Length: 215
Image (cartoon, rainbow, N blue to C red; front, side, top):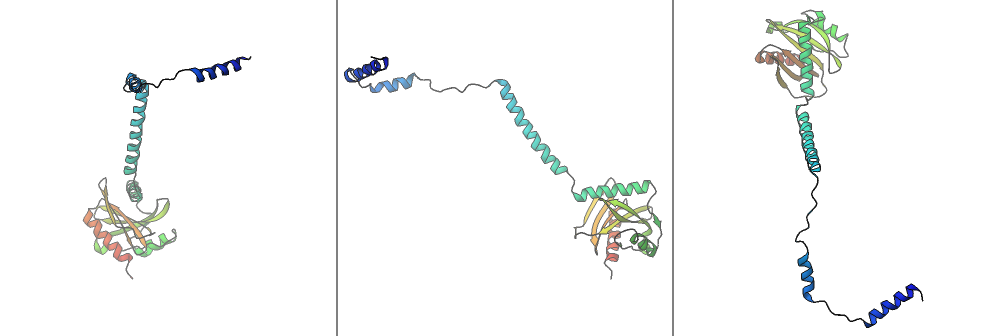
C-alpha cells in the first residue's frame, strides 16, 4: 500500500468514526475579544513625513509663483507703453527728435509717406500752441512707425502713429513722471508721450483726433 492510499484510508476513517461536537456560541465572542481593539498602522519614518511636507510646500510655492507671474506679466498695452516711453526718452536725450525738421505739414507728410507703407496724418497745430518740429521713423512692437514731434512751451510731445488694427479703447497712463495716452482716430492708432501735464496732453489728443477725422 502506498503512502497516498494510507492517507486516504485514515482520512476516511476519521470522517466515519470521529465524534463531532458543535462549538459553543461563546467561542466566537471569546476569540473576537482576544483580538486587539484596533490594528495600528505602521508609522512612517520621519524622513518620509518631512519629504511629503516639503513636496506640499513646494507645490504651494509653485502655484503662488505662477499666479504672481500671471498677475505681474505686462499686457500688450503696458509693454507697448514701456517701449514707447523708452523710445521717447532715448530720442530726447540723444537729440534725435526728428529726421526731417520742418513745421510744414506738407513737407513732413510726404517725407513719411515715402518711407512707410502708409501715410500718417500730420497736423499743423501751431495756432493752438503745439508747434510741429518735424518727424522721424522709429521701431515699435517690431515694426516701423511714424513719430511726429511737437513742442508746447519747453515740453516735447511725441505722437506715434500707425494704422489701426481695431478700435482699441482709449487709455491714459503715467510712468516715471511722463504722461501717455492712446486713442484711435480715422484709421490710425495714436500713442502720445510727454512730460506735459495731463490736461494739456488730453487737449492735444483731442486736436489730433479732430484733424485725423476731418473730411
